[in-house]
Length: 291
Image (cartoon, rainbow, N blue to C red; front, side, top):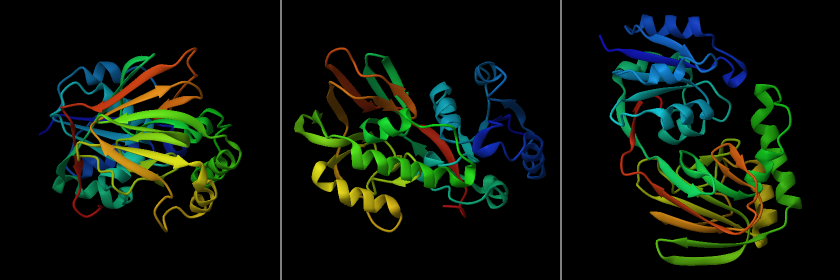
């Protein structure tokens, strides 16, 4: 029997389903997981052990935290998306409900998930979703108390519309695989995945295993179109400009930055931000009938 670790965030997506229920469902499928919570200090110790399978029950923050901590890139992990946006799960094709997902785990196949690294005044950090500058970073940094789970995505998109309407475009100098892009943008997002923020499919070209970063620009001239798109972003592509590459350098002068959901204050002076993908990617198990 495979040594299985279940990592559970009890507050993800409003705190459900409970730990006991998840363990029971997994045991019904022939697994006997050791379960640890993200909230009581057990996680770091557990991840230091050798496991055949790691199952992460949580949202994007939990998935990213575990992904950054996994030392063995060949240890497969599965995602039980119980968060709000679940951008990482969406990006690898996990769109089903738990009732249909858990029974399919035994038939899952492995898919690679790229891991980004970014150097800046914070040192060198890993990221899964994006490194961003502009309105999404500002919206995250000004987010208030968390609303009820059923309303979080809609409210997040409405709050982002406020920043689209009111924010001033900033000058960014970006180099992608040696090619320079300079202009005034409302946002620049260096994306590993196609989904970001409140479950926004902002880049249709991004894939979690393609070995490329998607650099997304929003021009001032597309401000109104972006606000309209945010009303129903699943219906059509975002009004953004996208360039793809393996290495990205950005000259960061002002405004907040974000690495996934972590916010960083503006630098005292201009600094270079360097982003690329790690050579070794992670293995995510994706059940066949929930893609």
